[in-house]
Amino acid sequence: MTLARHQKRGLIGAALLSLILIAIGVLAAWFGSRYQLRLVYGAYVNLLVVLGLQVFMGNARVTNLSHSAFMGIGAYAAAICVTPAATKAISLPDAPWGLAAFTLDPLTSAIIAIVITAAIAALVGLFIVRMTAIGATIASLAVLVIIHSIFLFRTDIFKGNQAFFGIPQVFSLTSIVVLSVVVVLIARGFRESHWGIQLRASADDETGAAAMGVNVVRLRLVAWVLSGIILALAGIAYAYYLGTISARPFYFNHVFLTLAMLILGGMRTVTGAVLGTFLISFGLEVVRWLETGPVVAGVDLPEALGLSGVVLGLVIVLTMTLRPQGVMGDREIEDIILRR
Amino acid sequence: MMLELRTLSKCFGGVQAVRDVSFAIEPGEIRGLIGPNGAGKSTLVNLISGLLRPTGGEIVLDGRSMTGLRADQCARNGIARTFQNLRLFSSLTVEQNIDVARQAGHDPALIDAALVEFGLTRHLARPAGALAYGDQRRLEIVRALALAPKLLMLDEPAAGMNEEETAALGQSLEWVRDAADCALLVIDHDLKFIMTLCHRIAVMDMGAVIASGDPAEIARNPEVIRAYLGDAGGDDAPQPTELVH
Image (cartoon, rainbow over all chains, first blue to last red; front, top):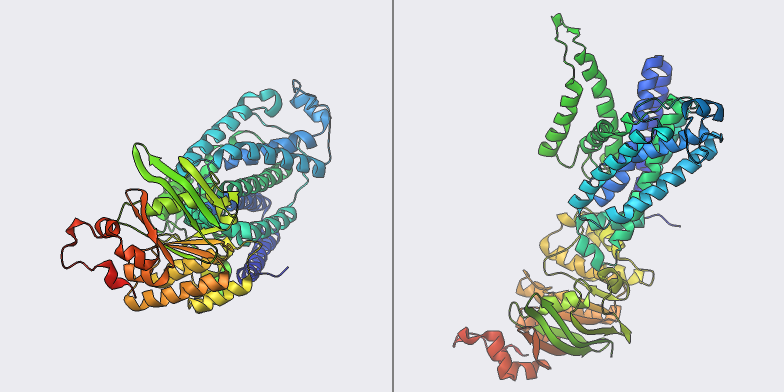
């Protein structure tokens, strides 16, 4: 197989991003405290979510608001499979269909979680991809609410807002760095593939793409399901590290956070997804510190709870106003370093 | 007989935009389609390319019915087109614009030759949206060739071009017909361009084909003169006969 020019450049770009991701992981492992390691791990989980979001949103240019729910499906499906039956007997005494009666190894659990998430994504996608852009966005919000409601009210399976505990900790910072490198390669590979280019063409001009033989509906579905699979990976990585999950982290606050990351960095590129995730992850830590009302340069700042929400909202408003294509626009990392 | 239209019709609400249009295009033919604004020319192209569904009649390409197929299916079956208002993929490069349309059966050497013919080779890595207007028009034609078309329909390809560019376009289109071995259907308002380029011309008015024939016949047809040049033609208006070479 021969690679086109933009595909070779894409490989260079993906390699550069991988190096950056590995470097951040190594720095964190060397210098970070236990608490900081957890934060960095969380940033990598969010990176997986933002990359999953980019695969659909960035290429089809249709805003999705349901992504955190699909992350939740992956997390819960893996958690239910991998948690020891003895623990589930206590935590899920009323579980139907024998869900509390078995224990699977982490790999099998992850595969099952990916398959379930992909199947649900495909089912939802059949409706979403036929809609107009605005219709699809509103419907995706409805999907978020539906899935969240199921998490909340089927307490016999998901425990709702209570903690689903006892998930074995199988992932480390190393695992998620490796996983994020793999997902960067997948996202970049899709973007530069024939399908990725056809999908981006349809985002530029849907009628023009159809007249050039592009089956827009089918390609959107492919991207939507691939996005769902990456979101499942994020959910699995989340559950396999924290050991405890609940419905709340898979709802609106997380949708908003990850959306802000992608919008700030620039949804059209994988580089934008990576940049936005780390900018906001580190920026928010500063904001959270400011929220506590610290003394800065002799000035005793007041407590400012809720500041992080205000800042995230401002990031979205200001980006959409001043630079709607995000920091990166149409440029990937290699477009900055290499000549066009 | 390659493309055959049989009593093709399209209604929008109560308006009959295309009315019982029947004609055939032979392989390798360059067919002109003229008529006043609102005559139904673009609607006809939209019907043949699958962007609109006909309300009646049939479209047959090489003996296979294309009626009711979606636009992407028509395109993959060899019906290519360009647009009056350009529909390029502006964030993609020139090369990627062409890649989008590439079909399994296309000839890469033909695309390379077409890029040379239309003077686009040096722009390959540029975003299509950054090209000059004339280059964008020419890119639409090269992009359509990547579909390995049997029929290429051009909706006002000379719009916005000066006389010199129009003449060069005409020669390039003859090159396309020979190199890509496809038939062309060309809509344009530039009568001189159409009469020089096309073997046969169909004239549409009020959704129907009112005349059909070679350029000389069309230029003599009194109904064409009335419909095309209108009653306001007066003494100053150019007579079609003056435009035949």
